[in-house]
Amino acid sequence: MTFSEIDLDPVSHITTDAIGEPGRRVFYLQGWLDTDPKPLTVIIEKVQLQTLAAGLETLLIDIAEQYPERAAVPTGYDEEKMRITPPVDPLFRAGELGIGYNAETDQIVIMVREVVMEGEPEDDASQVRFWCSRTQSSQLAAWGKQVVGRGRPICTQCGQAMEPEGHFCPKKNGGRKREGIV
Image (cartoon, rainbow, N blue to C red):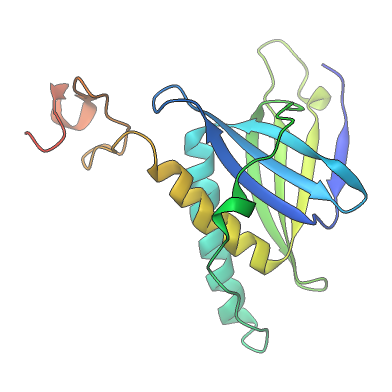
């Protein structure tokens, strides 16, 4: 593993998407700089995308409450523009994601740190920071929720994805549940 630290500041575009059939999808986060036509791509997990979308929504609400003088951000997006773009050549697989806000520049940062394999030093993990506008973050959150929603149904008891043949639900002591059948 070789260490690299990359700042896309600011991104000209940021998006996420999944490739593959539900249950076997691979999720990606992509960002572009105006100066480079090739996107920077990292692999993320479905739960990381769910958490990122929810975290961005919460952060945007907090910013609106803390800075009411700042313009409201639109929540819509153009689906065609939000799809990932080839080449899908990921830099690394994400281990940790974080978000933050710089009030001086009015930018949201999405920090992605490479997964560290057992036995490898933590300091060798690469990092990417995607610096986004609040509008880009709002679009990413809304689109991310839509991408996650295209997959397998989620169990209302435990929050885990359900397989078509049934679901081992820890909240039901392992009881199997089919969609619509208890």
